[in-house]
Length: 345
Figure 1 (cartoon, rainbow, N blue to C red):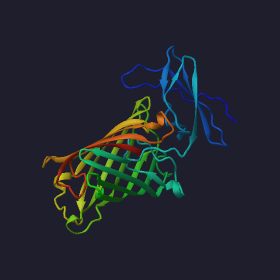
Figure 2: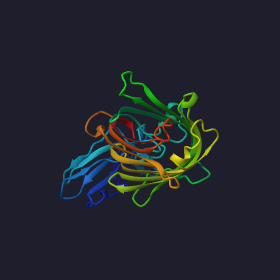
Figure 3: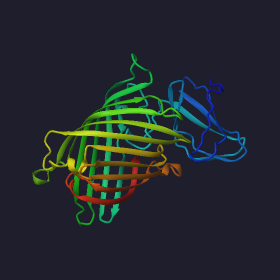
């Protein structure tokens, strides 16, 4: 049985705007359904637009919004009611996506061990006419919430897999120009709570990654890297998040037909993401070899159609400029602008 219990009062604001008069009233949950009602009340004198956040933290537990939500105008003195559920099966961004959220469960089983990882999309380019498809997932091999350490930490050992495919649309047969297969094994550690104003979320990822294009002969390309990537995610208010993740890596083992790839890819990179998780935002990934003056920049911008319809996809645009978009042409500079759809950001 639910009873109204004002446990948390918070003010939401957008960067560069005045404080909104929206008060959050969290209602005690129902033990049988694990559901919690949240009322967003407008105590001001003006109509306030408000997007219910995808998740809330209450007494150390993460509550996830049930179903989709859209920005709604709340009249003075009125409210909107939103239902949240602990450990809900709500889709969130992967560890390297825009608006990163921590792992939702402790010791999951079965298919719950599968999660999205890198962004997943299908994009088309106009000049030259080509297509790029990326699929990615990760699987939790081992993980738990440590009982002998801080209860605010979660960790996991994952198998990750990302595959890119590049089509040449200018030829009649539309051949696949190149593949990139990227399996990896990595350790991931994160603070359990979502970022709040004044309380950032810190994470650390380290692992080993193999990349190859699956070809033979002179077109064979492969490489192995060891990497480490710390990251910090900041809450900016009104559900906006900013994430920064520098990465450093070292090459090892055989590098078939691309022995000098480090000259073009370097040894370090940086990911910067800004946006509202699963709504809209932008992400930039930058690689640089300052000694050789080589590198690349990949900029992604997306807008989720779920805000205006029942389609759980996003319009996605990507600009790549520099070296090494494909392993086959790692030493050739290219610039590509592509637009399409994504199902994970």
